[in-house]
Length: 189
Image (tube, rainbow, N blue to C red; front, top):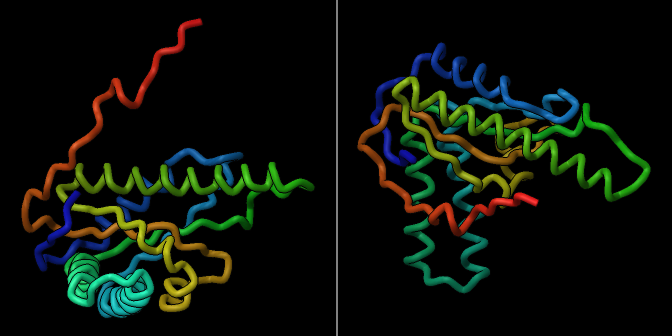
């Protein structure tokens, strides 16, 4: 994952290529419950400020030290504003099935969320193919209403994750992964 970007603009055609990759993801019933808001220009700072203010309130409520809070808020602000674009992946239940019971409605919501995640994974993969850096930020899940209001999103768009996009300023930092043996099993009977 890349968290530092150059100030080189990302051409709109490349952002559109990322979105085309996103919409090729699988989805339940082929309903395509994803929506995307491309955040550029001053909207990046507006979003980063609003999310940072919420992060500050949340961490203060957790009784974290003020200096730790400010470092975390500054890091988040920098990640969002240094990227030339952000792709906010949102979920809509507008076209999904509705059932008479809570169990199946909950499953339908999970399926829609999985589809949005698959679409955003495609964005990450395509970004790498195009020589762009990208980073998945789940922070919008902690303040979806605030994100929606800040960006004036349609009422049925539920923010899920922000993918920051730009030309990498460095190679990023490799993240360790658990060994395959710890996360997979073979079932043969």
